[in-house]
Length: 414
Image (cartoon, rainbow, N blue to C red):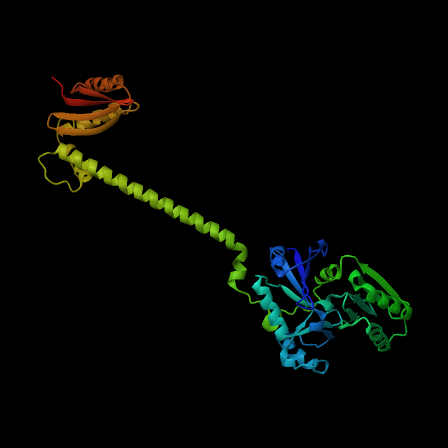
């Protein structure tokens, strides 16, 4: 699982969002950053994005409805909170957190217009949230008591049941007293107070009032700000992710195949290169075949000057060889005998290249290229060693590092 960037949206448009990165173990990476959403886009690259909504915009409560089907639970939740809302339930979107061992779960709710606006704003900066959570739902619980987060402009309070509210510093003590009065336990209510240094004088006054009223209180400072605590707590699976129901991300093949996109592109490029290479190779083979056909046509014309058409020179040569198998004392025609002798001799001479041949009864003229005059002369000498054939080197011509010569083969004297 990749790292998570936790983005906390501001209370008003005048303020800027803050964000922090945490790893899978809940360890903070770096410090809290503040800036425009354009900077968040770069920081969120290759990370999961969790967005914390302002507490003022959200309802955070709890439920123990026994419905197991997620769709039916989504439909039933609004009706169970009608008495706690001042707006129509149709205008609200509800989300359920993970059930605990007692079957209870945290419920988050927000107006649909607020959620739509947030998703649209994120999209303008190419940001896609994996989770959207009410910020007061990320306040850690204090067993059998309540937790408080003191910030510059407000205080968030969350009971051990999971219910959370946002109140002013001045009304905080009264709310605490009300929560304490509704408890069934006779023991002192434990309270954990997280103090953001930005709470200033109002925060100090609230701390002093709580300390005088409730003896069983623990105070914890947050030198890096409230988000340093909320970011870590936001990884809890018990929190309600508002991206449920109609707001749940749709599963598409594009998203499923995203991790394989680079590999698919590489495979497509490789396939294109292979097809291109094969096409070039095929064109080269076609060109070579055309050249060979042209050469065989020339050889056929020179070998059989009395013929007018040569539709299939290789087939014609094969037919001549088959016919030659039944003629002559040695079982070979004169032409085949010449070719056999030339092939036998030339295979032992490195660098020899027979470029052209012309046959007429009694004679076979060859155009031969060799690395040196000595090799060319040796070629003619070896052919003449045959008792039935004479080879004469009629002319030579130097061409670069090679020597081109004309060799004439004819019947030897008896």
